[in-house]
Length: 105
Image (tube, rainbow, N blue to C red; front, side):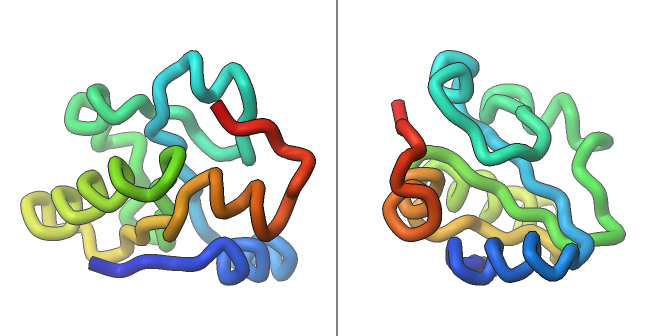
């Protein structure tokens, strides 16, 4: 399974590197805070596979990286998506290392 750190994601954003960011947290979590990207709750991922690009890197994130690791693993191993990356530490790591003012549910 591929993963990416919050520092690497920040670099991708700063250099405008092509990528998609997918937030798989629950709606109430996203209502508290988000870092952009598309919101596809974890339970809807398989029903919305067509929304996940296969021509650019995709970063999947959740609160701490556990749920996104499971989704990344499934998309890679069961659905052959080789361009999917788990955001290590999730939005909590983003808040800790990139944006300390970000509130996390």
